[in-house]
Length: 302
Length: 302
Image (cartoon, rainbow over all chains, first blue to last red):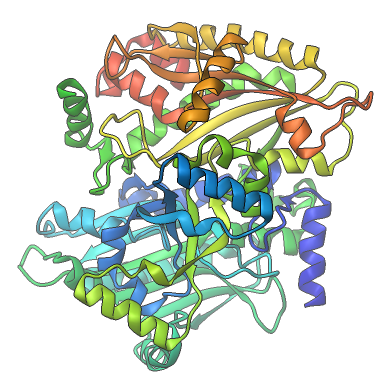
């Protein structure tokens, strides 16, 4: 905790991150953003030859799509729904009064059709489904968006609002497993080119509650999730900077996505935690990008 | 409405925007994003000589800061608060049951410390205040973020989640008025370089309710807000693509920002609606960027 606190404090002192008074919610300096942009461009170079279709979704998605996705079954604690005031002058007067007296005014707010995007790929699946059966070669998408997870933390690597870059593959089990294998290799090359220490390990998502315990065990036993871990907060608990996820037919079934042969499509994704990689770089190479090792600077800035 | 509907449909058909089932909430194609990025870079070139400090905030901000900002007094209908589930296995079971039976499950959600950013500059003012009195020359900031406004619409120019680029000036009334004057000129040059028709007009913000009517009149009478308008949906109701706002001492007083001389600081901002400018370009130059006029292509792509 002390070490984590002090890395976060160093980032604040240096102005790389900017405090807002809410844990896990920070502004970014121009330098921090430039590192993110350069790493994002590096990911593009590694994936370029595959010809993925680029889509960019805003940080919120359709609530009906979100409800259908199954996210609330697995991770209700992390979701963020967007609520708005739909009242009249009287309701407005009550809000103003509550604010003046320090009472909770949010009771006037009603859920809208928008929820915050929990992972960059969640808005994509209904779009794939709408296009009809996949072509024989399947499909490949390139995504990036701000994502929200309600988990306030003092670890700088656990932000409530952060950016995730993703490649998402939809196709036959073979196509999808090949995709994940190739990114398991590429991901390690990519992080090596940044001179960061790492290991790859099997992992599980933070499934909620009692029922979630078995889901974690199953996910690990089946090797559905791997993470590329870099020590940032501590050596003992390294940080997942990339993840490699095989969803089997989960999204294909949920959304009715069919392969060219009429089978339920399988999907997989590789995700890059952009803030986490930037933080790993600042942690290992120092808070002044001008003093980063020359090969790392060349990899990022060319 | 027919014309608007058909421009939105054209954008969907062409794949430039991607439907989500929620009005005003769209995915963007790679081409659409490239236009946004190029225009964003053009704004940077116009502002470069001023040496603004770059900050980037996520699409959400601190709820306590938001409450203090005064936004709820003026625009309660547009705000979006973020709510999360903080319960246990029983609460989770209720959510799952509601989802299964089609009942409203959002009653389990509680307001978090996060609200969606309503305009790129809202998270900035408490950061300026925290730094203490302004230096004699004042301060200048460069911002950009996704913003949320709860106003579902079929006009493609009125999105619920959209990006706003801003320059924000804090200083003496003279410094701040000079800044706004110079951007009123630059903004027109910039839009002329994109061969878009335009006019500049006095404007008002959408203040809420009965009390809001007088605020609209006052804002217009005092010339506090100007907009650069480009016809996109129709000639009769052109779209505000840039706005030039003089806040007088509103934020300085709210946040306790002092000038070097110990007076309450004044602030002003120029805002660029990035999606709106992109839509204006597609409207006037066609849906295929390769056929845009050569001078426009050179301005954007160099």
